[in-house]
Length: 261
Image 1: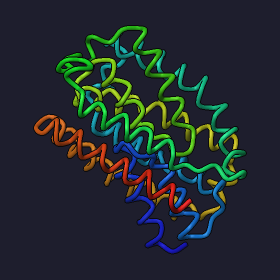
Image 2 (image 1 turned 90 degrees about the horizontal axis):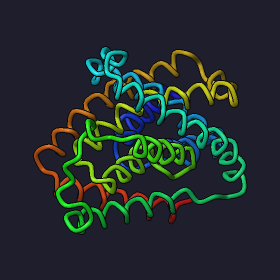
Image 3 (image 1 turned 90 degrees about the vertical axis):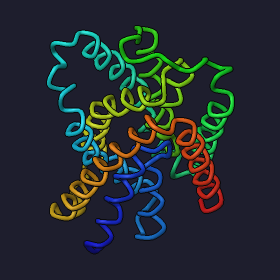
């Protein structure tokens, strides 16, 4: 691949990671069908690229991270959710590489998430009133459920942001708070995913020149930072419109993945 290709993948990762679509799956499909990698290798590249979005989330939420050892609830949330994510996510990563080799269609999980988000947008008040819960209302049960849901994102087609935000919405959290909680948790979950890729598929990270990997990381980090700021602003000002917009986008991408895979 040339430098333009790495920039394109970085931009895709920087935007898609924070939307209810599977960034690793979008990166995987572009890597495979545009740049010629195998689906299995492209899947690992998609996971490895999340290192850039770790940097963008850590930069945006640096105040929260700087207080993590003084905020007992935040520390407990990170520990519990990351533990349950690892218990589910690591085995699923190993299984996913085998399933991809057997022709698993990654579009179906994206379509399901889109339908759940659309249902949430249409029936939100009937399901959970106005969704007024914030991070201070989070309980141990919610932390465990969140971690399990986040672990499912190791599957191709399952968006980490999508499944975690959807889960929090159905638990009664507001859209803005759901996004914040999901984005903060991504720092630790994506760091774990990067370690898993390095340990289980180290050849993926060493098969490309280091300067090329850095290009993708830097581009995804910068684009991710802008995307986080934009999405949280939209969720704060235009909650209903944002809900409908991201659900329709997710449904559309899910259908495209099904048709092209």
